[in-house]
Length: 338
Image 1 (cartoon, rainbow, N blue to C red):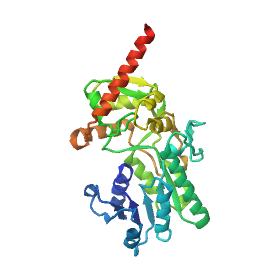
Image 2 (image 1 turned 90 degrees about the horizontal axis):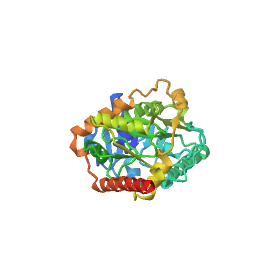
Image 3 (image 1 turned 180 degrees about the horizontal axis):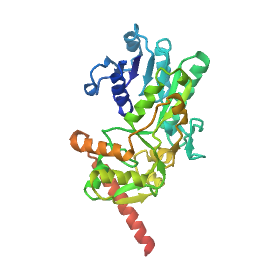
Image 4 (image 1 turned 45 degrees about the horizontal axis):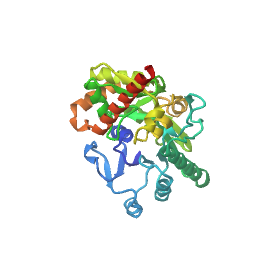
């Protein structure tokens, strides 16, 4: 198989890149080269800015692919560019959308690919829906061979997956745990969530590549394991070897008192219980099964980050904000008891 990835070094795509190379794929990555030093041997690099359309057209003038996948497209104009570049260059075009595009709030907790797409809380999700609409139009009217993939919360060894964190990543929450400080869990922590290790996601994605039955289809790829946010934070604390000190705070309150996009990331995503039905993926990729249990994956991630200080990015502003929120909750409770 001959494939081109736009991106290829992110949380979702890096595992796919590694697994494809192990399988002997002729793989090209088109990116700006910011993280290419981490790539395994065998990748063919097209170093360029995908937004420079004329330059890209010249780079791929003599190339054709079995699969082209864009991991870094977020708005319809970016997909319009991709269509112009690759409409005659590939047998399959794969777009990475998002499971956050599904109806929010859900009318049924069980999510299938037939669940309506609607998210009034998060512009990111609405843009992904618009991207899907554009690609489906090109498939129906022009025969553009698309496959839409919807990841949910996918993680790797470089970042601990969390619900509430600052703009500088999740390490500060782990640091609070290690310092025996309380950490914030949105809501009451009992809503269900699904996290998928990128190595498991890669197996499903690769099974859709070059798959004629996936053309024109939308498919989500997630683990079958559902856990509560309380369980997630307990797993992280156990991996760090500390006792969890949790403070539960309403998602609406967190969104109201933060400059982070918690309206989108919480109210439009993580504050809702979701359980994914992966039957469609398993019909298309019969041997797919997610094998990395969350507690095992989190342990691997925590061990990796503790051994790699470059991934321990402190966030003092977020740390101070957590202290303020927790103090405000304590003071409010005290006033009510007076």
